[in-house]
Length: 287
Image (tube, rainbow, N blue to C red; front, side, top):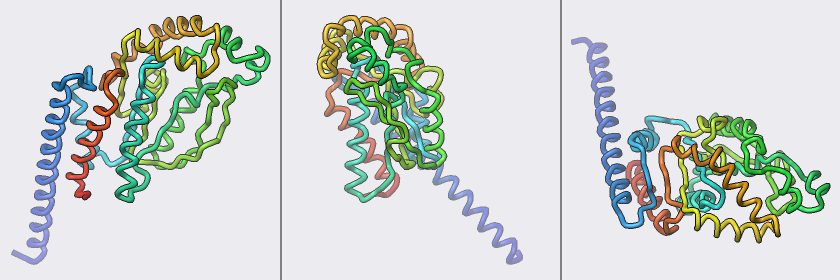
């Protein structure tokens, strides 16, 4: 056998070995993920209501490195469902881990609410946000510039830096464009009422819906309304939000890969994320 033939044989063997270990690695990851999700689903007061079958495969593909780009996560749900809280808890848990390991650009967030169109002049003309809210519908997809949000998501996934807008939720309806510089990250998470609507749903690798009972949602809504000084328009705004949610938000639950309980204990969310991080560390060799 010539030296060239030996060299080619060794290279071929190395490729087969790499392929074998890669295959074994992803099988191991899937097995661990299956157990992790199964244990949580079967636990009392699980954070999960539903998990689609292909979720494990998609997560395993990213963890193993089979899918090499950043992953995007979209979280939807009705107003006061707890979607923002879920997003914050996930982000904070991952950021704490990243800081403890001196890792950068692990996770970043796009807030869909920041893409509401600027209506500050309309608020001034109405005399207050409460009066403005009586005549302007904030609970329909057309109230937001979703196309711009999708463009920003696409650019981040391509590895580009993006300046995001910032919407003032205190009652001015003012939007500041090119406000926050965001760098690409391994995970890009986004949440909002219309995250799973047709205009932007396909921007996300993982589609999550946060469900909540009506009485809990209403209680949370009224607390938030008081913070935003909606005054005597609170009931009218709530009824409109509920009606529009039945049209634009609730149906998108059918498009979700995962349905979460908006009433689950926040510590349970954090624990599950910690377990997932531990698995990733094991696979990646991070101590």
